Structure formats: structure tokens, C-alpha cells
Length: 246
Image (cartoon, rainbow, N blue to C red; front, side, top):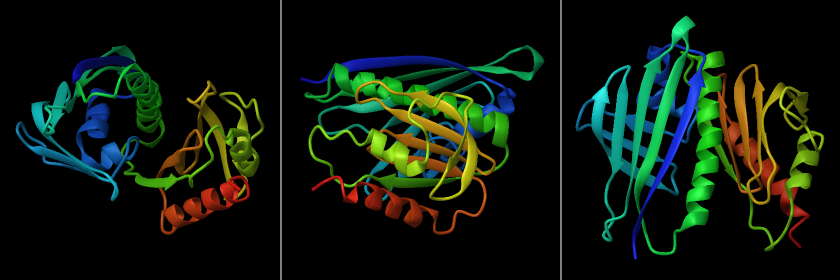
């Protein structure tokens, strides 16, 4: 049976409502902190689309109030399943903004509490990344760089392998300065979660926001020349795990 779900989040952003709106309601803005590339037909009833190559999703904008409220709903599946997103923007004193977010919809049979928990933890990371983007890179469109880890044996723990290959010490904390050694990227750790299967590492550099989703994938946002970066990072992932899967 299908069933409903709802995830609620709130994040304070060091930026104006206009900057937050640009980040959540334009294709280049969304690509700078979420997955991409996105296209946005910015109007009530307009269409939004995400095309990762191996995954596509299209939605219809159901609320469009620039600087205040954005909502959209994905196309329904044959079983009635869908996802809906709503953003509410509230200005605060001294130029800060509070963004309230709701992800709701109907899940197919077999997608239960574990899926919702994973989605909730993922949104914590994405919304934090959005706040980092607005604070440090507002107005600079980012290029989304995605890479997928190769298949791994069931139960394999390659998180320490990843950290070692990156040159990031185990136990690194938010605020630590690090160098992503394979690429010579100097930055600061801005996000860490190490809990069972929900490992995340975030590093903010001078020209990029680097995100490691456990040993499943990477999703970086680069604000300089990104030519060839997706291929380089994919080769790094393939090489890093290559000797661990046999």
C-alpha cells in the first residue's frame, strides 16, 4: 500500500530573502547547493525539471511568491505516488533569513520509515549547504559535479578508506583546515556526520563546496572552471575502491 509522509525543516541563513529566493527558485541557484542541472520556468503553473542523466524528474510549480513562498509537486506515478516541496521565506533582523521547508507526498509500498529517515538526514545536509552557498558564494552560479562509487561488497566499510585517500584525518571536526590531497584543494571542514550508514563529510574551499555522501556518491558545487572535474573525481572514486572490492 502507498502511504503519506512529511518532513519539516528550518534553517537560518546569513543572507537576504532575495538571495535565498535566487538560490531556491532558479536553475543556477539550485545547482549551486542541491542536485543538478535544474531548469525552472519561474511562474505559477510553470515547470521545473532535474536531469542527472540516469535520473529525471519533472514538477509543476504550485505556489510562486518571489521572496516569500515557493512550492512544487512532482508528476504523479501510476500508483499515485508523488513528492511535493514547499519553501517559506521569512526575513529577520540584520539581514538574515529563516527558511522553512516541507517535503511531503505519497510513497510506494516498500518505502518506509528508513527511507524517510535517510531523506531527512539528506535534507539536513542540503539545506546547510544552501546556507553556506548564500553566505559565501551568493550570486556565483555553481556547476554540480556528481560521482558514483563503484559497487561494493555488502557490509564493506570504506569510509576510512575514503578519508585516507582524501588526506582527511579520521575524527576531523567542523572548523578543521584540511587539504583534499588528490586535487590540492585547501579548505575547511564545514559538515560532518558519522553515524552508521549516514556518513557525510563537507569541505568548503575557496572555489567550491565539496560533499561526500558516505561511500555512495559525491555531489560537489564548483564556482570556478569545472572542465573535466566530473571525470577526475569519478576516476578518483574508481581507483580508491578498486583494490577494496575483491
